[in-house]
Every structure is written in structure tokens, then in C-alpha cells.
Amino acid sequence: MYEKHLKLAAHSGIFYLPPTHRAELEQTAAHLGKPVFVVDLAACRKVAESLRQIGTILHFPTWYGANFDALFDCLTDPDGQAGQSLVLLLNGTDSLQQAESENFSTLIEVFQAVAEARRETNNPCWIFLDTPARGVAALPEA
Picture: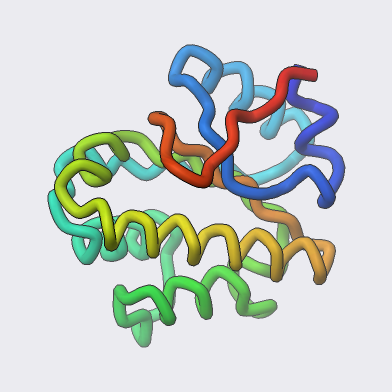
């Protein structure tokens, strides 16, 4: 069902994907040879904590400052993660969204900018949230 979305850079971006659909998406990504990173943010009460967690899971370089600018830079650096397609599953986003709604909105904006920048270089990035968020569309069914 998700193969169409993960094959085309034009279909990349940030989406809401219910947890019940994640296993199928992971299998499809693996079948297509796209690396999948799962980041558990349930214990994060501050966006700064979530930025550190993302950096750890994605093995960002030591210069990563765990801030919005550094997140964008690391995710769009052609020598790093941006050199290949990427599927990022964010779990536990509901508590973070409730605890820090303004910073969470900024995080969403950064992810949207990352997805757009990577589409332009044909190294797409798909980012999936496990809870609905303002400005984030549900992944359309094929």
C-alpha cells in the first residue's frame, strides 16, 4: 500500500501515520532499500530533549548542537543523512506536542523545510508522526 509513496521523491514529506500502519510501512521501506530510523520521544518533555534523541538515533556528528538550525543542517547535509533516502518514524509525539506546543510547531516547520530541501536534491525524506498535528496531513492511502 505504501510503495507508491516511498518510490517517488515528490511524495515525500511529513505525515501523520497511525501506529497500526507502521509495521507495513517499515516492511515496504525495507523492501525498497530505504533506511528506517525509529525515534521514541515518549520520555521527552522538552523539544531540546527530542532534538538530542533524534541526533543520537540518526548518529549525527559531534558538532550537532541539538537545536533547530543544527537539525536542519544535519538532515540536509549531502555528506550525511541527506546523501540517501530516509524514513523517520517518530513515536510518542503526543506528550511532546502537549508539553511544548509552540516549540513543537517549530519542529514541524523544520521537518517540512527539510523534506522540501531534500526533494529538490532528489534525496527524499519521509517523516511520520504517530499522532495528528496541526499542519501535518495524514498519509494518503494508495
